[in-house]
Length: 244
Length: 128
Image (cartoon, rainbow over all chains, first blue to last red; front, side, top):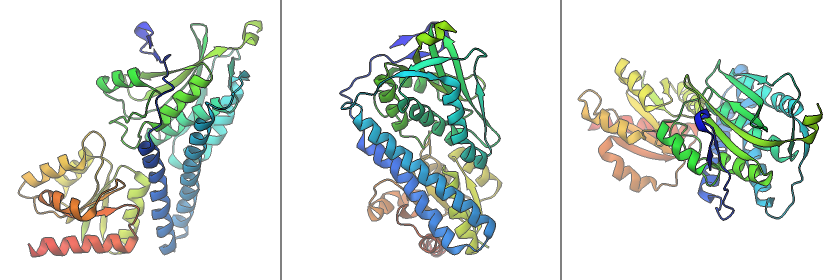
């Protein structure tokens, strides 16, 4: 692990392939959306209020999508050791725009704003076109879960120390310095629940760590003094970048 | 009308439980954390509490322990629900000293079974 001085950013460079996914964490994360689907479908059966039925119908879809994404991410994770995930130059702006359009319906339902913050100069990174969006979506799902109504999620891209930094900033609860230190030490190596963010078993971050490792990238995280956290990834820049 | 406080950090789940209970004549309030629950209890003591067991930095037992220590909240009956693999009967006994009357498995709850469990807890508390 490399601590980058005063930035508060930490790189996890030593992913241990021997760390196995926690089946308990996966089961817990999958059980939550299933319980919610069940409860909302039972409520849908007994309500005649058209407005409430519309809300429930939307939430059923969003919750099913959340469960399906988790299953897809776990499936993708299980293929990482058997398959080669080739990397290629990817336009950061395009990746962010796709992500933003995916997030928009759920964010709008939750009353959360999503914005993109990128430098004027286009950034091109080297990443896998399946893993990078899945990794970022993972961060976004976490951000949506903890950002309060009327809050904002920012998709941030920047060049930092010759690498491409892509982050998702939320306005959720800030974890304690002690939990943050523990998170930095173990980030992405095993599922690690965060007590300030109780609905998470840490499985998503663990999966993100696997994806990052498969792309020779590293996870980073930051706390924000006035609230919220950013989870991000440091990726290699494309050679094309130097031509711009 | 019976006043119920739902303590659950999943907003959509709390809202859904709340809607089902409102249809059955309860007045419902929701709190997403133990701190928020305590603020609401200080403003108005509910007739019954429905709570998730796992609640962030403090689990529900810390809050229930505090409620048990006050004379005006010690008798408020509590129904717990959880996604954790629990043995409801065994855990009901071990949580009884915290005012817990029932422990429900979230994956088995229906709107009517939820209301029935709360009614039972209210009846038992009234007869104690």
